[in-house]
Length: 214
Ligand SMILES: N[C@@H](CCC(=O)N[C@@H](CS)C(=O)NCC(=O)O)C(=O)O
Image 1 (cartoon, rainbow, N blue to C red):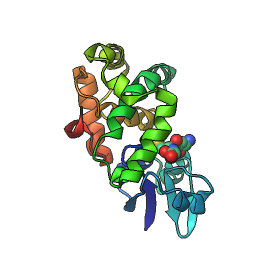
Image 2: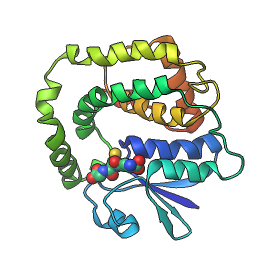
Image 3: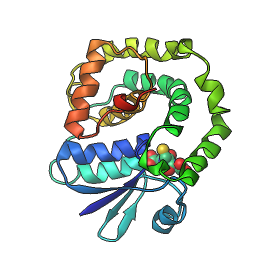
Image 4: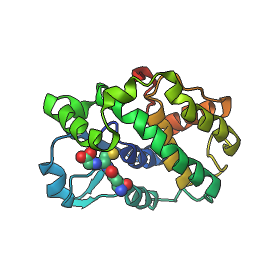
């Protein structure tokens, strides 16, 4: 049985989890503590997840894991990618993670079940974003750029089953971002985007975080 080592909040880990769900391949999900440096370093020589363990062999890098698992049986990520989707995701990335990280830091994720696991995350991530309390006190207008990007996304979604009609790596990257967005309360999802994120969540067996949103 494959073992997949992750943090529950981690968007790269969502990508790796998705391919197992989409292909209905059984795997064991192992959630590491955020401050556990020894385990990932022993496996891949770096403090980084996701990590796939397959018969004593270890593989890092989310998209390598996706490609490896997609090769099992008939590949499913056979569709073309759309440069407009990549461009949209690039523009979303900065504003998304600025709002996501402070919320993740106080959410009940298993990787933060120890005080030291949560403190490790806050210490590391605040180095790049600045104080989480400052970001969280910005008020609802801080979400306006995210809402205008979500409005734009509607016209890029060609099917709720696959953003470009046939499943491709665009779906892997896009759903991972939508999964992170779901931790942010007060976002407005156009109907096309709402249908896509709900359908994809069911297809890949990765629940959205709406229930934890703040
Ligand atoms: N390029 C890597 C990036 C993975 C990555 O950045 N993982 C983050 C978690 S979201 C990580 O493990 N960072 C180290 C840490 O959080 O201490 C991939 O796609 O797998």
